[in-house]
Image 1 (cartoon, rainbow, N blue to C red):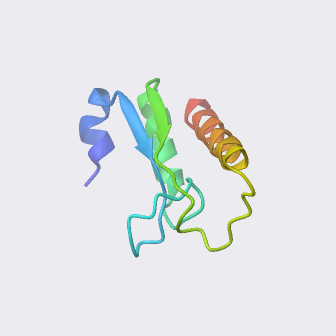
Image 2 (tube, helix red, strand yellow; image 1 turned 90 degrees about the horizontal axis):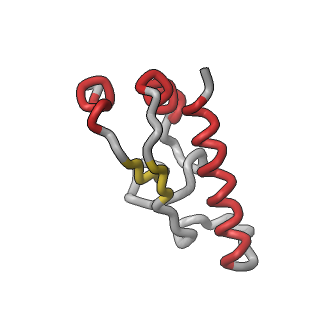
Image 3 (cartoon, one colour; image 1 turned 30 degrees about the vertical axis):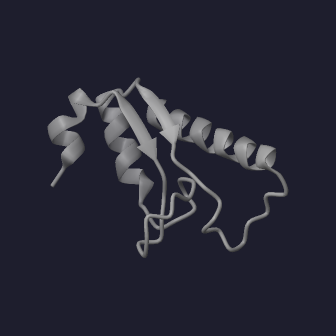
Length: 90
């Protein structure tokens, strides 16, 4: 079922996170097993211009390299900006 195809014109905000399918892990996009290509292509097709919010935490990442909260926030900001660029491409 293509939820974005059916209801995408009603979409006003995104709350994004990734996981490996075993739990609701709230990893950053691209750090799990979700295939973002289909999602970004559909959002690009819809010309989505709404808000993007990452719902991410670091508690499930066993290979965490974040030595501070600021480093984690900077990485989250870069991930959100990268996602925004992917959905705004022509």
